[in-house]
Image (cartoon, rainbow, N blue to C red; front, top):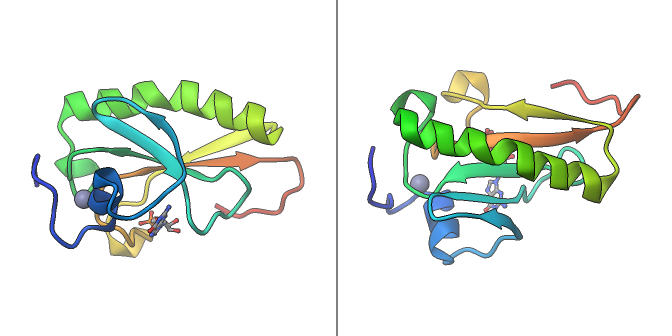
Length: 118
Ligand code: 5GP
Ligand code: ZN
């Protein structure tokens, strides 16, 4: 937990630029990029640049920064994809579906009748 990148963390490597990604929004502390395996077009991940494993490791200030990014990024994704709705999802721990243990929020564009079960 903390400020230093974790050696084997995929998202820390994305932050550093060691793994390529489609960056769609970036501040000093927050990065948003397209999910490599989207469940819907425009599926985006919003992460703190610093490494925290999940919601419960995330300092309040970092949580505020993530939350502050949601509306502008979500609005841009909806405009770009033509989606009529959007889900915000966070998986914490393996049993809840967390696979990458660097805290992240999913932004998932939705359309009426798209059949997604989230
Ligand atoms: P989780 O299940 O941990 O909430 O979600 C992890 C997400 O990260 C998954 O939706 C997965 O597709 C995405 N992901 C995993 N590895 C990479 C990667 O190397 N690049 C990008 N852009 N997304 C990734
Ligand atoms: Zn990390």
